[in-house]
Length: 333
Image (cartoon, rainbow, N blue to C red; front, side, top):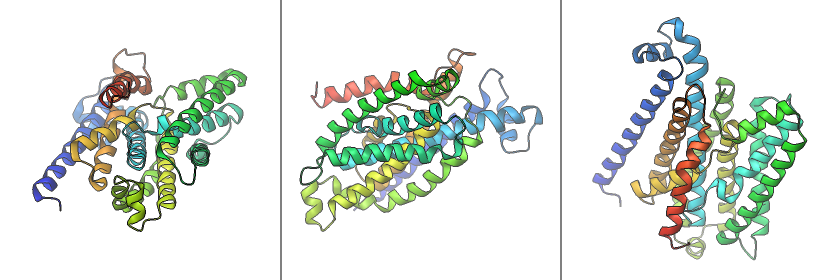
């Protein structure tokens, strides 16, 4: 039973993370090539401010930051699910191959079907990630799925998807290849409400769904045999959870490209902050992921202004050393 003190601690942590997210969101709206006064930025975002700043805030900066928040939430939730069901803190949508599958599908559409509507890209990314997940699941099956085999096969699938992406970039037209290359870098450049609204339903539907599975997720931490002993249908439950993870990762990748390491770091940080309870860990991981992507995009915009660094590059600079730290801590290398 969870103590009241721990519940209060968790509530305060969530409140702190919400405040930090709102602060970074405000900074994203204020800062840029054109500095906007904080009060005016907030008033304009709420629709009651100076019309002089309306286009910059409402059509450029605000939707871009909110899209980044949703992308971070999706990647973090997907990574949390994968880390729990594999019982491996190194698992993430990028490592296991889901991001690569989604990316390959989206790059194929961008390079081969230039007129394809943006609003349908989450579906394309979902199908690409789903195909990767199905292949991984089938190849890792030996009278049952093995989490170790899933990770190893996922790494191989990720490499194959990377090769396919490289091939598509070599045969595409220059304009489409440029678009795909910018997208592959994990950039939020040019993201508007056209990108935000198609992404929102995926998070709005899948986040409550994964919370319904929170108790079953907790059981996965006990081991496969314990899950079976408690009467849970192990393989069907695991496959449903993977499908949810695919939907979260695929939709996020479709709108921002392959932003690396968010799905690795955010779940791990949430585990250290609130423990292994899925009901508490999932919301905290989502808020950390959203905060991380918005912060990375903000840094990418202002560090070398007027030039921009893709958010994916910022997360990689931070995430790669973090992954090495985890490997060293677990005595893997």
